[in-house]
Image 1 (tube, rainbow, N blue to C red):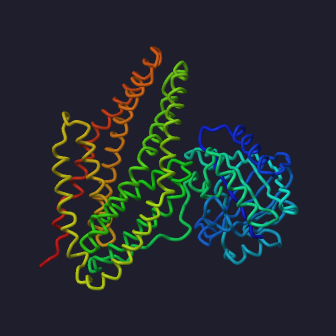
Image 2 (cartoon, rainbow, N blue to C red):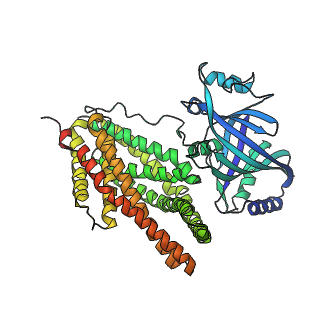
Image 3 (cartoon, rainbow, N blue to C red):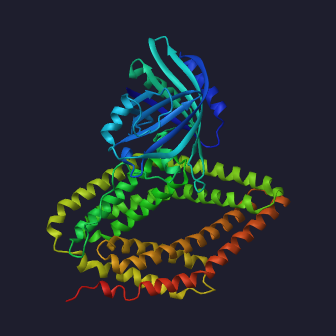
Length: 525
């Protein structure tokens, strides 16, 4: 069965009931007849092998139960275009619980699984999506025999582990059961007028996967295992630049929906890695085009930043609730509403950026730069990793060491922030070269990551304290609430001081691990 669906997410903080009423009114004005078909509760448990064999083959696999009914389904994994999913779906009704879901009873699902799994493959549950669904049937007099099913889903991903938090979301789904595509297109033109709806880019499976900490990629990212000192520098450049473009494309839909904190975070990391890679390898790239792309990616990083910062503040808020007495709840509730309003605005700006021509041009220009570098690289194959590695590490290593050795008790937070940025860039440089020098660079790269994490945690406490101070002074906070925020600022200051005390030990470990660099990378003459 070929499934054609249009899906939308409700923007965070909006009332599902109000959105549904407004949408029903709009559809009625457009001539649609709306027939309620009732509600039901569903449970979908998704399965795969330990190696994610089904996902890599382009399929999701679930067991759906609703009351005493059970059904197996496999869906083709393909990303939505403008909120519309056009994919193959295979379903099979069960007449009893199968003992082994890798080998269900005879039917279309069993037949497809047999072509994807080996006889020895075992599958296990990944996560569960519970869903309260309300269903409506839509008819239009201009298309007498046509039918669109509208489903309003209040869903929740249950990751299955205590370390991962549940992920709630509300989704509106239109499935064309019968009739021309034109009817669905007309309906989507109506839904576009509802500002609380965001075009979905991911399936429930993909949302569940990121909530459960699973592997997001359906195909393996570009391999870097072939890099060694004798590898041409241009090959190293193209390998990393391809990997960064891959990351941007993988995480963009997650950042677009912005349901899970990792979506925006990982895309922001991808933009920073891409900028560093372009700067590192600019000696073998078309310089003008590379510099223009660096500026464009910096713009994208700026659009992602406010959403990420507010996600961090909301994470801190969850910790505040555990540490403060119950009498502080009202103050924290008001602060949460303020953060959520700010995040909705920031997410709106991000959506505009990702939907813009500037973003599509950025991705296109990135691909063209890669093609140009590949073609021009034929004449640059005399430059090898072993010839240039020490030069690439020399300057950033010198800068980090100078800054780190100057840090003392009197250093302002801005000095640690600048050091964190340079530590991150140096770490990326070492990671570019790590496949060629695993024994030499693994330890310093590991210590740089720990140092970066420590400095990042310190920066988060500093920013959180400043944000709390700004909120208290600008939002007309009452006397009782001011005491709450004074306590929170003191807590953040204490956490920051604790991390500053840990800096000296983390720095010494990095100094020991990086002893002799970059000279040990210098080729013998």
